[in-house]
Length: 161
Image 1: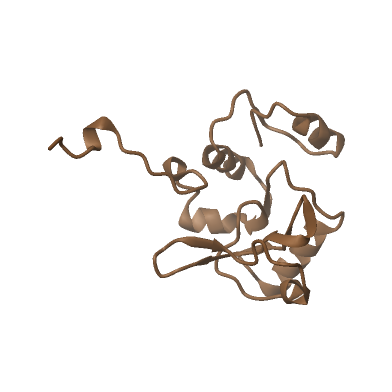
Image 2: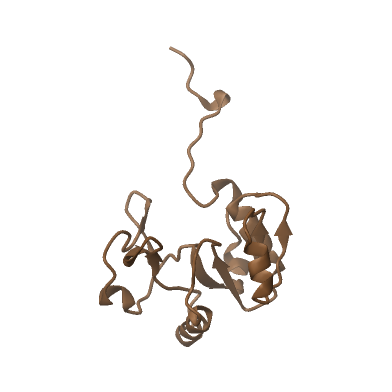
């Protein structure tokens, strides 16, 4: 899925052999991902932001690990593009207050982040998911988007005092 990008993402994807479904304008992360999930006819779906650079064997390695573990999803570590010795993120954890925490974010890369482990939440930055997962639990909640948003409309605002 191309969500109305203005860079060379479509051309680069096509040069790499990808079939690209192009949206003329950005319709929101969740909407675009959901359209891609619906169109996919594969067992696994890769969700990858266009500003992420992956290693040549990224997809093959994640598929191998996912199949071997019979996992619903698989992700790897994401390094900071401006400081390749620092972690941008690995997997997400949820605190008791229901806020997400990107595990490893800002920390130095080390062997700790190279260990395979069971995780509960994969970031939608660069991960693969079994299509069956979405068939069982549904797709992304489009009004929620990809990050927490708080907005108060005039009708929802408390009355003036």
